[in-house]
Length: 383
Image: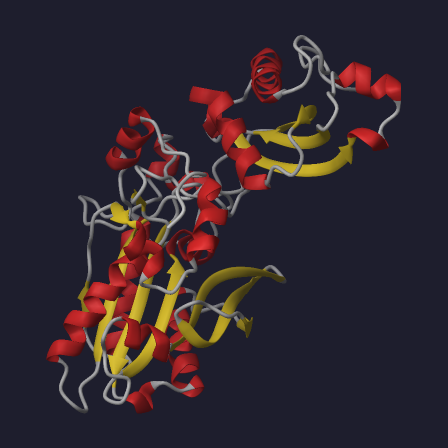
């Protein structure tokens, strides 16, 4: 498998990831995320599904577990390496709780008797290089729910029954819609969105367990079949409680924390005003939103939690810009100009204008790749 393009994380980033609290784990008191997953699994048992067998595993997994066994093409993994937190050439911080499933499926198939159904549930924290808005963070919590039974279990009707039973427990008051969404390890894959205030919010993906996956795992598809589903626990918790921003799940403000140990409706904590600026940069062409977001968060350092949202507002090639703009930007031949809208908001206190300007200046200086000393100054607010 090609590894030349893989960029490994630093020791400090790795240590931080391994020490981060997993909100799906049992604690005293349990976090709302843990309470919701428990309620989902109890709800499934009450609706006739098997009692869940909880699967836990390490945060560092092999590329084979996270990608290979699940059917990802090696070239595809290489292409996505810039979005993966590699630890070394062969291991990474897991990007999905599905990495725990192949070995669990093999164990289940070895003991499952004809007519028996086994439900595997793998909750946990995962690690991405993701976009930044109120629904996204770089360390989302997920839960995989896979049901292994006789081949007759693998139907679209049973899949929709599983989805419906999960969402009845998780977000009982909300409707949902689905659309086709192919996956590497399922057949008949769908994406499910909950309708929230009239807008769709993606909460899970699922499908029938693919015959190709069973064969790859040396599981006889003539004897076994079933359903595969992965859900976003952060988003479901936000939708259940009415929480407006994913960062609040970890916010240490006393008034926020007091609401993070139940599933009661969110009581608004004063939403302090946001500050928005556009940052115009000279950068390497084609950088993805994920890569730009990660560089921005690194540049922000200890203030990265202030960043509520980052959007790419526009991109312009060197050849598309007038000479005056090229000079002002410090744009070098072969580079492009990217315009970012960066929104700051601290959930606990107001950010002063001076603090905001200093952070925007740090971000601009760190991300600018053009001529040294050039670029738009960020020490004054834009009109």
